[in-house]
Length: 188
Length: 139
Image 1: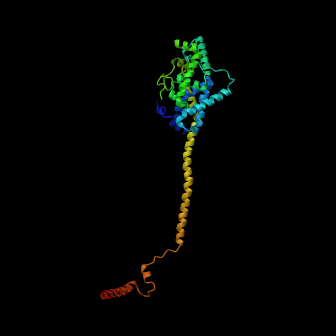
Image 2 (image 1 turned 180 degrees about the vertical axis):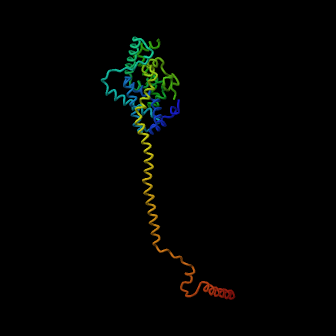
Image 3 (image 1 turned 90 degrees about the vertical axis):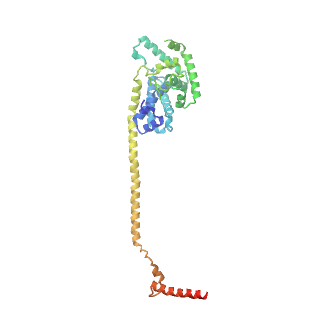
């Protein structure tokens, strides 16, 4: 990992404020997955999540002077992501569902398999939809993106105990809703 | 910050992660089946930000030059004013009659017509000496 990749958020923000494209790129690299996961937890649609996450970085750059605690850039950015995502959902509430693109299409699955995976994704998104937004965020950040409780707590500015509690309930609910599907995942 | 092969962070492991849920949720990661997805994502964002980044660089450069110019705008008139005041004061001081040095000798001989200090001192000295002798004898 390069020097910028190891630099603290505060320093990267200071450099980005001066127009340093590499520093801004490092911030994007560091938080793009998180931004996407948070956006997806709100929009529940891939393209909307992608748009919201990308736009949020641009909005954040334009408003970088408003980030009063640059070392807490992630929490501030996620607030922007959430707001952009909610606005997008409001604007496009009538749009048809746009599922996450097939992530295994390069392996050349059969049409039946593609249909089955599409169905699994649809059910996953529906199951996530049953959760409160904060639980969706936390379960995606933890079980998809691999963030630790402490990291999520810091980034989302929540107590660590609250993060653990949300994660527990989110998992329980997802297991209840997805039940058989998850069992098949375990087998297959 | 540690990342796994997919660029995910916080992966000092799978520590605490629910493997079954993780496997299911991976279907929602657009980067799983498209290894270039996140690369393209980053590239798009940075490319879209190019104008704003350039504006910031320009703003910073102009801020530096503006600061120098601002200093110049403040310092030059101040220096000119100070120089003018100093010149004025200098000219004005030449108009005032210079204080003539008062010679001690002149003060001492003031009112003593035609007598120079040595003359006066000599006569006084003699008088004083005599006075001192008389006094000594009387004592």
